[in-house]
Length: 257
Image (cartoon, rainbow, N blue to C red):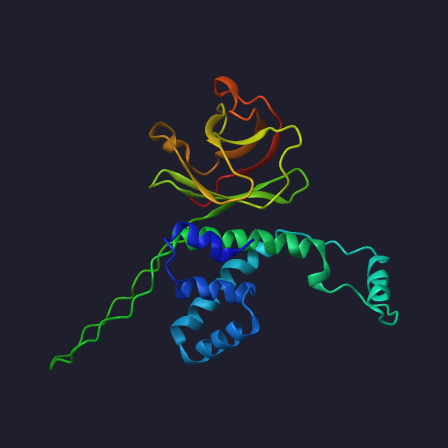
């Protein structure tokens, strides 16, 4: 998943902000030259260094939600043989584990979510003219609230979509973790399910690109902790009569609103 592409889709091709660059640095998606430039910026720019630290604190806990699975022992000897390397017995590293890449895919999607909702460019503070009085303490500028991310998990526990709910604006940003299309030609449909209530359709969603789903005014009161977002497979035109007919392939409970 290309984080910069997802950001540009919603940001009118503006250059990536310092916040986006800091997030990409934490995920390690730049090439060597760009990374060296950012390392110099971290050393020279305390504000940028704080952004990097915030991204580290924000993304690290998400990785704990994904287990790791060791690659079968017979795979690495075959790779070494194919490359002409001598045989060696080594334990799989973190980046050689299936769970790590599943986690990093979800983290990349989460970064795209936060990038879209926090795409305002950083502004340099205006210079202050000294005055001959005792200055009052300058109040800290409030940080922009990050929208909570709700993972919609498949039956095997891997994320199918990441959803970020903006109740005030009445929208849900959906970022899919890329997957193959349904072999039977069915389409994924998003449902909002209040606790103890019936599913209400929010429309079809994409399996390969981030997009925003508008929530009808009448359903915005249901965008609360305890409600569920679920995805079912429905006919290409959507569920008939607004009633789910296909299997649930991913779901997650809204929390932290």
